[in-house]
Length: 93
Image 1 (cartoon, rainbow, N blue to C red):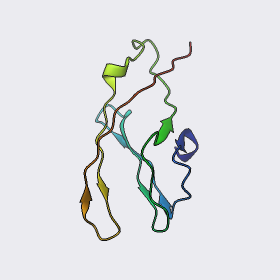
Image 2: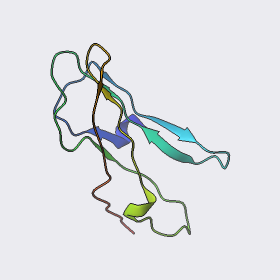
Image 3: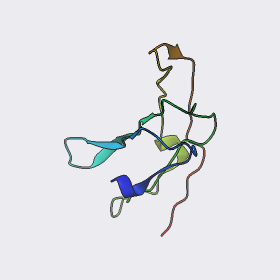
Image 4: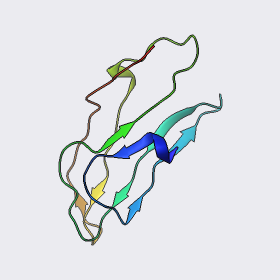
């Protein structure tokens, strides 16, 4: 899994922890990518690149099939206002 998730922030992290969550059908349907940096602020902009395998005979996904939720805080644990969106989707046959 870790080889299919790329940190695009340019920040060497103290902790980089992508994890997949499977649904009852046995497929990984959700991915969480966490980044902790104590010495360098994480900049705004592209955060992560993820490579997925599509299910055989399933329809090709669209941007609308993906969503994201951001959860950002300071070193002291104070919540920082943030947002995220999926902005690019490349499919290959």
